[in-house]
Image: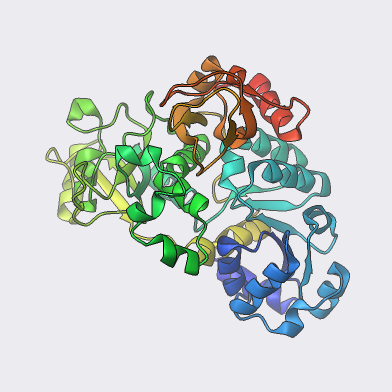
Amino acid sequence: MNLHRMLLERQAEGRPLRVGLIGAGKFGSMYLAQALRTPGIHLVGVADLSVPRARKALRLVGWPAARIAAKSFDEAARKGSAHLCEDAQALIASPQVDIVIDATGHPASGISHVLGCCTHGKHIVMVNVEADALAGPLLAQRAAEAGIVYSLAYGDQPALICEMVDWARAAGFPVVAAGKGTKYLPAYHQLTPDTVWEHYGISAEDAKIGGMNAKMFNSFMDGTKSAIEMAAVANATGLTPAPDGLEFPPCGVDDLAHVLRPREAGGHLHHHGQVEVISSVERDGRAVPRDLRFGMFVTIEGETDYVRRCFHEYGMTTDASGRYSSMYKPFHLIGLELGISVASAGLRREATGAATGWRGDVVATSKRAIKAGEVLDGEGGYLVYGQLMPAADSLAAGALPLGLAHGVRVRRAVGAGEVLCWSDVSVDARDDAVKFRRLMERTVPV
């Protein structure tokens, strides 16, 4: 509750938190809009593969041209402006940057950026949850060894779920389940960039006019993003996936305590302490009343008669037994809220969520039959989607992580709905991301 006061103090002392952003896409742009208006923050630089695109993003969200014209990071620090460049590692290495935000969404790049921050002693906020799902447990371990903060990004659903779980436990409540909402039907696992828009609720023509990336939006619809985000939550909170992954039960906010309780109590959960995603539509396509498509939830347990009586007295919605209740947040503001992570890392040296172990993994699963010789096109593409699995099961099966299922050739014919394994594809064992993931598989316990 004191972050704003602490930021004001840093502003008054002339010691703002010096921030570097990698990736000026939608999430990054939303942060840029607020960074301009937040006391105690100095955005020193933005690294993007296209400097003109980064400049356009900054101007779009209200940055004056004079504030983004510095020729170097040193000049930016002197003049209170920002330097734009294409070299992310140069931004990380700059002594003028204290905190790095990775908003790229590229798993291999994310690993490289975190390791660079470890080398140069920079805190890092990982909007790049794709990298966290691929190798977060080892990345967090490396960051701790380097004495830096490695943090999930506030405003994105995983960090907000972690906050709700922490609230519940700090108040003495056992956490029965936690997760988020989405729009889901089983057939969505087969969606491709060509078919996604009719299910998303917009025409392909309007999506093109709006500059919407079909592959990215497809990853939200085909279940991949949900799997990635719940892996991050599991690894950060100690909650675990069900053996068969996500069930996506239809559920509105008034039924959270009824649906998100263990099966032996009449609910849908495989076990107590589970991550799950709920759907905003029934299996027949009807809308769920009071859905939580853009929100997050935590289900808690009242362990005593007295606590359960308090649930009733203070208007908590419970299951029929009165034992289970849920809290929820209906929306998340993506990059507009990201400054909470920046302030928490820079002022308190605390992460807004980070892996504490390896409990969930996201594996590549075929959308259709794949012929030998075909090349996988990764997250949101035509050939595979991401499926959540317990990390122990993924490791035992030799499953191919979704984050590395891009640009690799399939060695054998794979049937529709099959989990792909390392042995099914030809990978470059010299690739840095492959080596880092393989190291995690050998060294991080599950």
